[in-house]
Picture 1: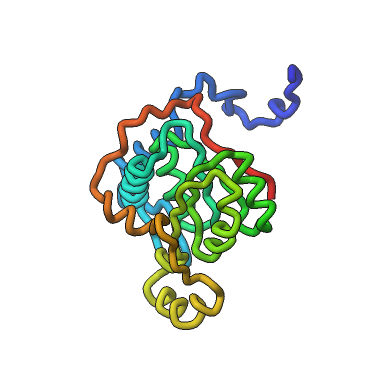
Picture 2: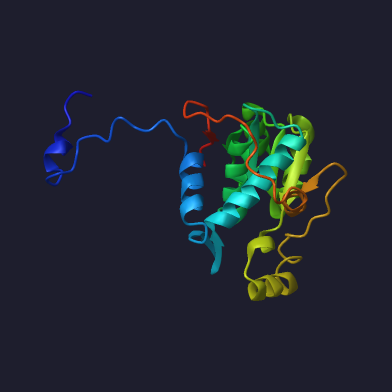
Length: 214
């Protein structure tokens, strides 16, 4: 596109471009922010605050867990959950492990979910417990070898978590009994807590995200 008429409306002093862009990734930006301001808020969920430092160590730990469970550079890893802290932690962990995030709408029907998983070729899925049984029902039609599950209550403020457990967790289908071979998100993070970012080279030109339409 040669003509850029919007440039005429830029305020004085605003450049037409920020090029040359630095050859770094979003992981580098977050790492830099964490080093400078580790206690600053990175995420807020239902009033609960997660700092950049916490986001960093949790995603580092999960990245090590993914690698220990077979995720390699270039592998697609599905995330099947709504907008929660676990989504962001999982996203950064997958990138740190060298993987590609396949973000899949958890409200898909079984056949739609099966199609998306087959299309991206994911062998690992990180799933909210509310959708665990849906994924298990179609797993044998996909390439999934491992499922990592997390309950939405894990990152709720304490009072809200207690109310959720008493009033909603069982009633709304959030409780899940994992089958043999499946793993808990929180347990994986605790098992690898304290480990630094894996020494996987992640480059700006690497594929990062497969986003299916909703």
